[in-house]
Amino acid sequence: MTQPETVQVPEGARGDGRKRLPPGQRITDGWPILHYGSVPRIERSSWEFRIFGLVEHEITLDWSQFMALEQAHVRSDIHCVTTWSKYDNDWDGVRIRDLLALAKPLPEAKHVMFHSYGGYTTNVPIEECVGDFDLIAYNHQGRALDLEHGGPARGVIPDLYFWKSAKWVRGMELIPADRPGFWEMYGYHMHGDPWLEERYG
Ligand SMILES: Nc1nc2c(c(=O)[nH]1)N[C@H]1C(S)=C(S)[C@@H](COP(=O)(O)O)O[C@H]1N2
Ligand SMILES: [Mo]
Image 1: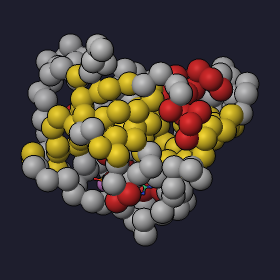
Image 2 (image 1 turned 180 degrees about the vertical axis):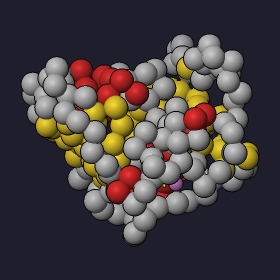
Image 3 (image 1 turned 135 degrees about the vertical axis):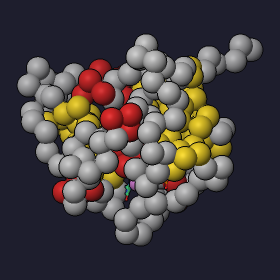
Image 4 (image 1 turned 60 degrees about the vertical axis):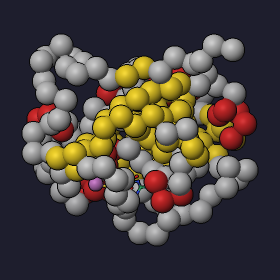
């Protein structure tokens, strides 16, 4: 049996010579747990993922439909706005672009609002969540994501600060113009590029 290919973010992936560690960050060995509010407890058997808003087809996937999609294996780095970074995270998931392709965003759709169980939201421009490394992920280092880290499934968008990677994700809403999500309403940056230190708005 052939092993699935893992794609890894290379240093200077954008050819801009940037360092792997963004400015103002330091490496951590552990994996801090950070979120607002309590941990929603959703079973895979009752989990649903909805893509809605400015799309040709609104769709709702259950766990088995989600797992039947093409699987992606990605190694990427985490950069949290609170200054910790964590290298070499192995994620298994489904690419966000493959999920969007099922729903077919309309031309007017410009941003994605991620929605989580528990009410969390975060906003990302479409073009920044359709790369090879951008996932809805369910495994970390080969193991099912702990509930505390967002299980059953979370967003993983490694080129933006980690608050843009919604834990307990339950859907993506396609919207015509940028709109703040949860932390963005409390002053976090609308975009959140770690290499530009877009921490607060
Ligand atoms: N649903 C949800 N997702 C969330 C958050 C949250 O409060 N709720 N916090 C974000 C922030 S600020 C960070 S730093 C990361 C932390 O993920 P971790 O606990 O797995 O390290 O989750 C992000 N995703
Ligand atoms: Mo954060």
